[in-house]
Each structure stands twice: as structure tokens, then as C-alpha cells.
Length: 79
Image 1 (cartoon, rainbow, N blue to C red):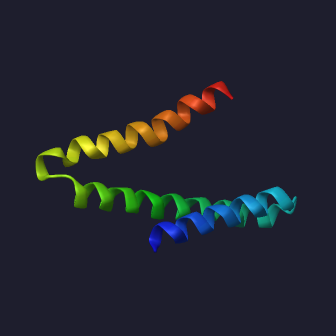
Image 2: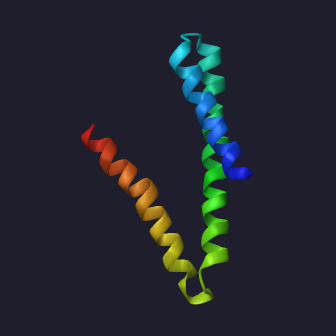
Image 3: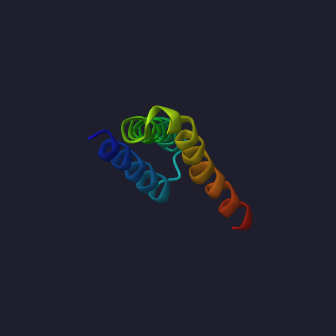
């Protein structure tokens, strides 16, 4: 449910950003990024905690942070 909420907030943010030039709406839409990212990150932390054994959890969190922001930054650098 939290991941679906996160995706809905992200979708709303992108729709707002694509359809307005109003500064107040843009600022408000960007606040949604904090909540959608936070909710998605919380889901990933909970997933790695529930799916991995104790001795693999640190590795799993490192993988999540390497793949998500790492690949996102790498892709963003080339765009």
C-alpha cells in the first residue's frame, strides 16, 4: 500500500510539473518528491529487512543504494 501511495505521489508530481508554470504549484509539487522518495525508500528498506538473513542485510542495503541512486546518477550524467 505504501509503495502504491509513493507511485501515486510521483505520478501526481510529474503531471503537475508537466502542466503548469505557476511557481507555487511547482514548489508544492516538488514537496511531493520528498514524500514519494521517502515512502519508496522505506519500502525498499522493509523489503531487504524481511527478505534477507541478518548477515546479508547490510549487503542488501548497500545494493539498494548502489543500484537505485547509483545507476540513476550514472544515467543522469549521460542525459
